[in-house]
Structure formats: structure tokens, C-alpha cells
Length: 489
Image (cartoon, one colour):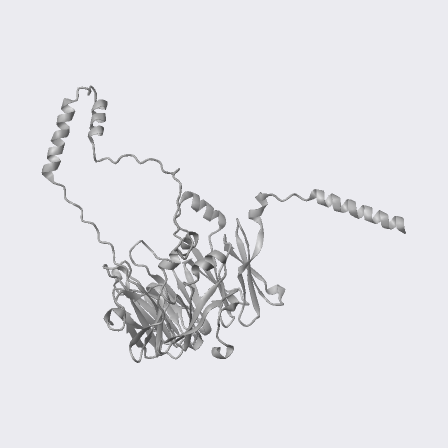
């Protein structure tokens, strides 16, 4: 028996050794062909019956797999091109799936080398459980109308190089298979029930720019506001019964546009509120304006609008070019000619060119190569941030804005924070906000890593600020003060 077992293990060892010798060692050339499951391309349908996932590779084409859970025979695959991540969206009623197909990896590489025009994506719409598939060429973004699950909005890429930022938006009816096209659309967003579509228009010369509301049931559009301005940052409420947006008007006096906030509610007969801080000289600091870097929003009770404000910065005046004195130019040319005529070293055209070059003062002196110059970082001991931190935070500081609110009934603007309280988190239900500031401790935080802050409670009805904690130690992010579960109901 022992001899048989020994023989078995010897044969097993020889078989494994032979198989190992047949395996090819992995090299760096094999890595681009590896295939893997992309986490961003995985989704389960809202009813839990369907699963979709993508298998992609670093340098190659990927596939999307769609299958009804528990039914292997229902599994279907679709090409998605040379992507490492792909957007896959189920409709809320779990009857449809939409996804984009990128150009193939080889096409992208060829186009990159030839520096050709940007390649475009395709959009595929598939009815689950069937072989029905509809495809659109040259697609930018897309969206189902949320809980309605009856329309698919498809934003097409901008055509041409004009000053208009908007492009065509196709509204496709999933039931009738008919489509409606809206022109020069910059932003669009469906409300939660999927009954209304809010969109902004950005056309050539800003003619027709505005914010619009499309009623999907009646196929009717209402103009909510029109102006030679830019409209952006559409933001629906959670219920989908109102939305807010920004209106930015160019002012050549300043580097940034002057902002206004728009609030729309009572959608069947829209009530439009537009707050213009430039006209509120008593309640709004005229050194500030509404910031384009923070999305506005309604309070849950639709009585207040929240938005960001930031300082205005004057535009630099263009220096007027001094006109040349024609008499001075003539005298200079005459002097140059005399010097050339008196130069006895000129015997050829080449000598003449050299003489003219020496006397030409309009040419700039060649700059020395300063590639070897050392880089210098200067930090003052009074700076609360280390230089490396200042560099990381530079763009964030430029785009920073303070929270503020507008009470629609009283027509009153209230600033909710200032430079003494840099952080503010608006709590659910919009009754209160928690503010914090670490400026007093920032240098120590950067030096020793121990995080301290001052915390405040802000009443969102009055804007009144109350101190909660001073010198509060935060060992981790989970130590931040947060609302109780009851406050979320």
C-alpha cells in the first residue's frame, strides 16, 4: 500500500512539474491585455431582477454583460469600445438599459498619432428581455426621466466653433418612439417624478439665452427668464417640486460675472423668484456678488434660497499703447543711414546685413537659458499654512464662496458666514447649520497634526450664530458634530 501511495505522489509531482514548465512566465508585455471587472460599470436594476457589468482591459476593447439574475440563458453581451470605465443606467421601471460605446482602442490610438478630429461615442438603448436595440451616433450625455421612465434625453455634441456653448438635446419617447429636438441646450435636468424637464439655453450672441421648463405630459415649454446672460447650476429639490439656478451677467468692470439667483416653484403655474444683489444696496455688500462655484438650492419648505457669495475683483485696465512720433522715427532712420554710409568695412551684401543687424534696436536680446536656475520656495514663519499646503489649496481658495440665503417672503438677504467661520454645513430640514473654523489652530495643525476647531450653531431663519465648542479636539473625521437621526425625519 505504501509503495502505491509513494508512486502516486511521485507521478503527481512529475505532472505538476511538467505543467509548470509549460507555463509561460508573465512579462510587462502581458499587462496591457489583462481583463478585469470594472467597479464603475456594475449596476443592478431597481427591481433587483437584472444585473449589468463591464469587463475591460487596459489596452483593448471592453464588453458589457446584461443578465437576468438566476437565468444564465438570458445573458447578452455588447461591445463598449476601448474604455476603462463606462456609464451604465437602468430605467427606474427596470424595463430599459442605456449605455455608451466608445471608439475602439485601435481607432483611438490611430487618431491620437494622426492628431485627427475628436472621435465620438455611440449611445445604445436596449429593452430588457428582448433583442430590441436602438443606437444613436455622436452622443455626449444622456438621462432617463427618473421615476417617469418614459423619456430618454440625449445631449448631442456641439457642432461648429461658434461662441454658442449649447448643443441639440433630443427628447425620445420610449413608448411612442418619437423624438423632439431642443436647440442650444447647455444644461438639462429632470425632476424626481419625471414630469418636468428644466433646461438652459446658450445660443450665439446670447440671443435666446434663458431658462426654460418643459412639461412632458403636454409637450409644452414655458420661458421662465430670458436675457443676454449665462444660465447654469440647475438644482431640483428632493421631491422635485421646485428648482434653483444661477444667472451670470458679464460686467467688464470685474474679472468675474455678476451673479443672480433664480428660484422656481409651483410648476403647473410657475412662480419665479429672481434675486439681484446689485439692486440690493442696503442688504447686500456691494463688494461681493453671487458665486458661480456653488450650486443654489431651495429650503425644504420652499421659503428660502441658499447660494454662495464671493468678493468681486476689479479687472486690470489695459495699458494704452503710446503712438510713435513720426518725426523721431524719421530722424532715427536718417542717423542709421549715415552710420551705414560711413562704415568702410562693408564690402558685400552679407556685410551690409550684419551692419544693419548691429544697429537694429527693435530686436530683443536673446534670453539666456534659465533651465538651470534653482527653484526657490519662500515661507514666512507667520504663515499658518506650510508652502506645500498653500500650493495644494490654491485653486480651492480661488473658488471659495461663503454661504448666504434669501428669504422669499421678506425679500431679505442674510449672510450665513464670513472669514471668521470658513466652513459651514447646512443640516437636513434647513433649520440649522453647523459652522467651524480652524484659523487659530491651523499652523499647529500643519506642524504637529493635532486637529482642533471652534464650532458654531447657525440659525437658518435669522442667521444668528451661537458658539457650540471652543478648541474642540478632532482625533478623526468621525468626531465631527452631526445631527441626531430624529433631525433627519
